[in-house]
Length: 246
Image 1 (cartoon, rainbow, N blue to C red):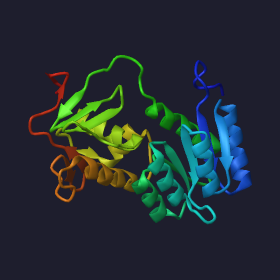
Image 2: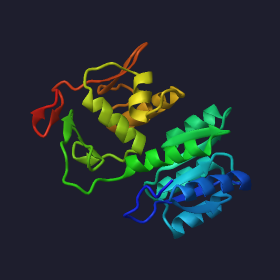
Image 3: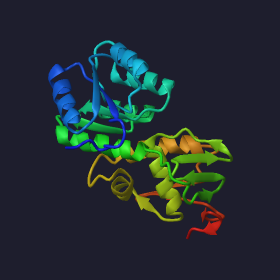
Image 4: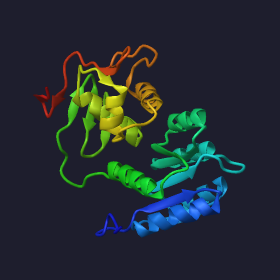
């Protein structure tokens, strides 16, 4: 595979795994895909490496000695936004959900295909890229403004600190006001997955509500459609650059 960003410096990926075999294999695949790769075998080393040379993305094993992946993810988030893909064992569903709650952007269950991981890395980095072009149409509804080109969202003028998945989910819901979107549909359209753990969608909706709703316990924007999924309700409709987007 060639460098996905030939005109720019190669994106830097930090691989954090205490299994030297896994770390070596993942590093080899990412290196051949054109990424600059740093490695760390534990949490403190990962944070030191991230502070020394800020990565564009972190591939983070959940089960690390001493300081586990959840703690590392929290610490990384405290220093600023950085995409995180978590590596989890197939039976660690509760920890995987907690990782998504903390702000991991994606997860891959072990055992996994290194090629699949590279594709996930490419996908997350592609979503995290901010366009240098002129701002495109902005979507506005219920005090929320979404700028898909700049990947920025605000609520009543206050910028929302959204993860990549949260931003993509909000954008999709705002673009489809009044539609009942199933979890399967969101998984396919927002995540790009043909199949996956539907609890991932539930977790991200819960996190997004915490950031856009006045009272997340009584949501008025992102409504649950029982037995189906979710619906974005905007009483005044959604507008794009002042024009009705519907």
